[in-house]
Length: 476
Image 1 (cartoon, rainbow, N blue to C red):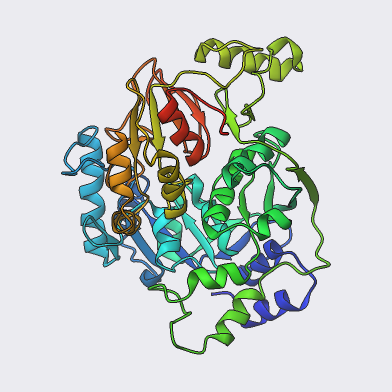
Image 2 (tube, rainbow, N blue to C red):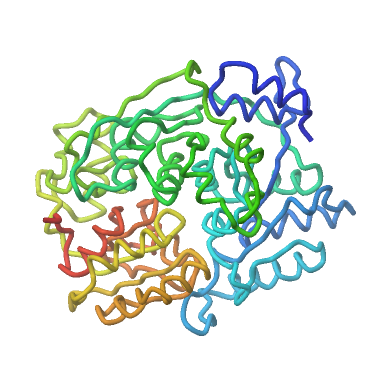
């Protein structure tokens, strides 16, 4: 474990949160070599873990700190009402293998019907496992979501998963630091999803290469925890190693009384709160790079191409490849050829066939409430199929308690069970060949939601509006 001295040293220097957490978790440092870095918690799912468990068995090694590991089912699972329609036999085997491995190694598993099952980056915060100052890893690139709580969280590969199982540490190089400050007041319908798409459109999908990002500024300070999770979730789409936000009172309020949180109801938790808040960046902290994103009068964003960088405001026209620099123009030409869209045409009015509201980016209560507000009293367009997939069993239960399921179903949408679903087509929820999807997920790569499908990233409100109108539309 990191030493108490390391923690105290981190707390006495004027530092940003990234360097504070890093210094407090270095087990051993040697110049010219990666740091031996302690991992506070690892989250496990069915897709990237089987080989890691096998590595332990082959070497006759056990978990060194099994109480720091938690598992759930999310990627390969069906989200239909009976949980039986697996995409293929491999998906079924992955689920069964995780159950077997967790039982054999005595690792807690949030299985179907447990009340805790869901997308790994939704259930961690929901259960209070995600906390300020923690280092968190998972075999999933969007582990950066947990950075919303002031945690240093990132995705790792299967070999690294086995290393954490066996040693609770990794060999890592310290990243450079980037401060991303959001300033200005956007328009009424602008959301956290739009803010992070605006950042990626500004700096590009490689703009954060080699850096860890801290999101700052008035806009971030006023965001809910759900909005902050959306921001950090997509930090890696800008090339960053991970993104995070300094903890504050909003963070503390979220953690109060959650199952695994040290902040218990009806108890004096002032000491724990102070320690959590102490991880926040110091006022005089320095960074390797500073980026400012001006949101003044910005409208909601929609992607038009095949990577998250290719996004524009809803009232803008799709860029013409000939108007861009050589590299961007080539990428735009390929994207438009694939998508069947035309440079210079408005993005608003583009017909869609499917709508997906879900994923680790936008499947929490705030997201479902926003979609329900748009859908209430309206009907899904005749030609559109809508999947609304809550991020966890907990979110689904609360949505039903609030009557959101009835709003969705009356509108003609499918309100499904929790899982990754149509985000990545690793299950039976896919967008068919040649069909176009308005999606609240985080990636719009070629084939991401199904072979030969087209994806437009947007907020839950915009996706719900597209479902009603049958086309990407500007809110009024």
